[in-house]
Image (cartoon, rainbow, N blue to C red; front, side, top):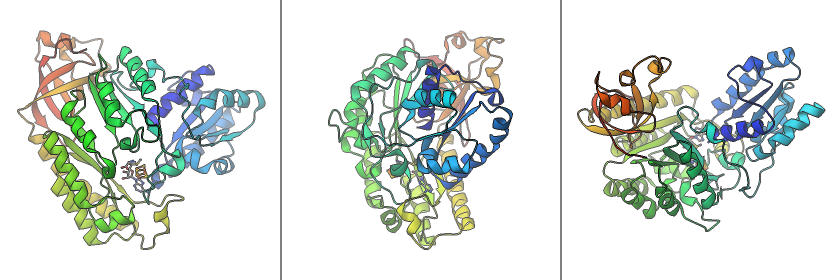
Length: 452
Ligand code: SAM
Ligand code: SF4
C-alpha cells in the first residue's frame, strides 16, 4: 500500500514541478513515506529522519517531509521532535501536497495536515502511468479501498488509515485499463479486508469487481491482498474456480493457531472455522497456494498456545508465511493487556516458526521439479540487467512469477530462436529443474502466442 501511495505522492510533487532523483544529497525535497505497523518500523523512521539534519544544515532551502502512518499517528509531535522537518502529511492528505509545498516554498513555514476524510475524492487523478510497476512495468498495485473497521486488538491500521471506504468500481476499472494500455499485465488489488469491498457503498461486491476486471483485454493476471478469514465468502472462494485471470494464490492471515489467543486478538474466527475455509478453497482450486501472517508472542501466549500455532502451520501446510514478533502499538487494546512476553522469548518463537516454514516451502518447491510452470516475465534477473543491451536476447536469464506467486528464474537454450520472443510481460512455459527456499530455476519451453 505504501508503494502505491508513494506513486501518488511522486505524482503530486510532479504537479509542483519536482522530478524524482536517486541522489538524496542533491534533492530539493525529501519525502519519507512511513509505516507504523510494528514498533521497529517506527524506530527506523526517527533514526532516518535524524540523519537528514546534516543535509538541512548544508541547504536551508531543502524541504523535508514525512507522510504515511507514522506521520498520521504522531502529527504535531513529529514536528516538535524533529526541528528540521518541514511537513507532516497524513494518509488522507496527499492530494493537498502541491498547495502545501507551494506554501512552504514561499512562506518558509512548517505544516501538519493529518485530517482523516470520510470519503474518497474520486477526482484525484490516477497514478502516473509512466511510474507503473516501479521495478518492472509489468506488475502493479491498485488500492481499491482504504482504512479498516475491524479493530484487531494489536493493530494500529484503523487509527492511522481511518474508517473503511471503498473506491468506485468504475473508477478502479478505468485506472486498471489505463495501466494495461501502458504495459501492465498483472494487477494486485489492495485493501485491508477486500471482502468488505463495496459493502457500505453498495455498487459492486468484491467478487463482482473481480469478474469485471477479468474481462479487461490485455490484462493477464489478477491478484489481491488481503482477505480477512472471518468474511472470506463462498462467492470469493468460487471465483478461484471461475475466473481464468485470478491467480491461484490467496494470502489468508491466521495470526495464531490458538482459539484463546484469536479471541484476545479480536479476530472473530476460530481455528476450526479457518480450517474449514482452507478446505473449501482447496476443493474449488486444488492447486491454490496459501500463505499467511503469524504473530508470535502476543500478550499471554503460553507455550501451549504457541505449539497450537506450530501445529496449524503443519496442518495447513502453507506455501509460505510472514511472521512477526508482537509489539505494542499506540491506542490499540492489546497494549493494555498484562503478561507481555520478553523480547528474547518472542525471538526464539519467531525463529521456530521461520525455520519450520522454510523447510515446508523448500519441500513444496522441490515437488515442482520436473513440472512445467507458466511464468509471467517481469524482467531480466538482476545479475544480467546491466548488460541487457550488450548481449543476445536468448542469453538473458529472465525472471517472473508463477500463478501461485513463486519466483522463477530461467534461461533459454543457447541458439534457440525462442529467446528472441521473450520479453517482460510475456507468458512463458518453463520446465522447472532446480528448487530453492525462495525461488525456482528452469528452462523456457515455449512462449504463449498472442498473450496480450
Ligand atoms: N489486514 C490484514 C489482516 O487482517 O490480516 C493485515 C494487515 S497488517 C498491515 C499486516 C500484518 O502485520 C498483520 O497480518 C499482522 O500479522 C502484523 N501485525 C499487525 N500489527 C502487529 C503488531 N502490533 N505486532 C506484530 N505484528 C503485527
Ligand atoms: Fe489490522 Fe487487518 Fe485487523 Fe484491520 S483486519 S485491524 S488491518 S489486522
